[in-house]
Amino acid sequence: MADFTAATRAEPGNLFFEWSVDTFDPHRFVLLEAFASQEAGVEHVNSEHFRAAMAWMPDVVAVTPDIINVETSGQGWARMAEITPRL
Image (cartoon, rainbow, N blue to C red):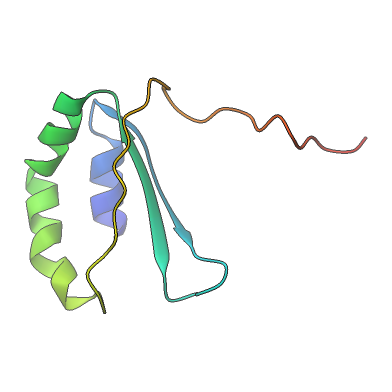
């Protein structure tokens, strides 16, 4: 995953590409990705590193991954308003 993740993060239209582990199921990984435009997403799916990853990923997943695709006007992470550190 490291090479695929690094290559995707280096794409000009990539805003973020973040992996995490589900807190209830440590065998379930969650990927949050965002691209600056629909065209940037298409370029990602047509990239060589995406094709290479799709060639080996079927050998390492136990089930077909779920996906949610959302378009947003945001350009990255924002601060959460509900929680701030106690001083």
